[in-house]
Image 1 (cartoon, rainbow, N blue to C red):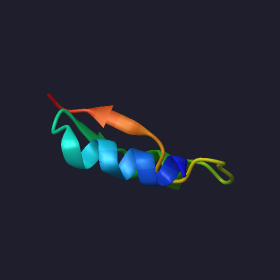
Image 2 (image 1 turned 90 degrees about the horizontal axis):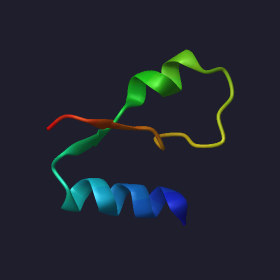
Image 3 (image 1 turned 135 degrees about the vertical axis):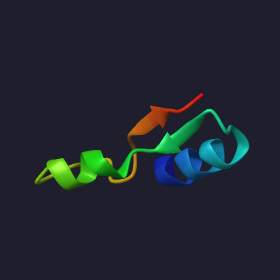
Image 4 (image 1 turned 180 degrees about the vertical axis):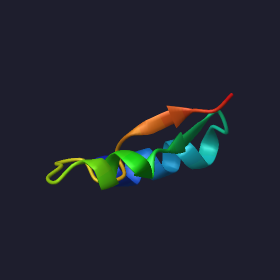
Length: 40
């Protein structure tokens, strides 16, 4: 599934983290934990 792919990608690449602040801003989302933030 896409969520599994996002978690696998973030685990393998330390340049990105899941941006959970987006989930808190949106009332409805089709991609929970699906927004990434580049940190490096």
